[in-house]
Length: 233
Image: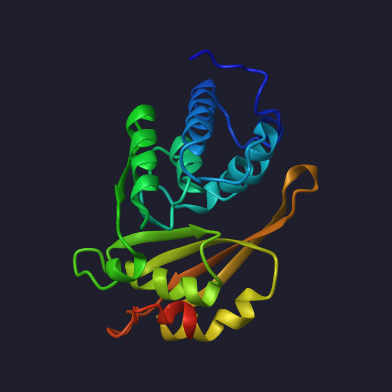
């Protein structure tokens, strides 16, 4: 596979990638994403530049927010965002990718194996994982992007974080934080900070919320049976 070094100018200009090795792995991931997208619905974005900006740039903007050498669980991995670009950029992080759709899991496992990334894939639902003693409150960091509203997402994610850990949530700029404050508090979290940025080519305003895990999550959460979405806290 021959890499075109004329690609990823946006990422280079914003210093989101810093080595040829990162460029090559991102390019290989791009090729795999497009190939598998023809078979499975991984992303509706098919143009290379749009993928670079809306997926790669967005994912990499938050790379500096992850503390070194931490265990990270990603909920609703889908096509691998933000996890794949983050694993390429931050090989000190150990990722666990959680995805409920089997075919998407096949893709994620293939990318991790092909690019020799530091991650594993679990074909599970987040609400089931949160009740499993093996995984509950066992990770340093949980992250997610474009999965659900923040109040719903908090119930999926906060049960997985150990006390002292963090939830790093990639979101569009809106009023979700206000609506999620009760859920965050009930589930043992506390809002820490937010990081706002603009994607290149007027592709949108984004925000990353940092939520600290300050108390254990009560045993009855997550509730399961779809209540996280139908009746958010």
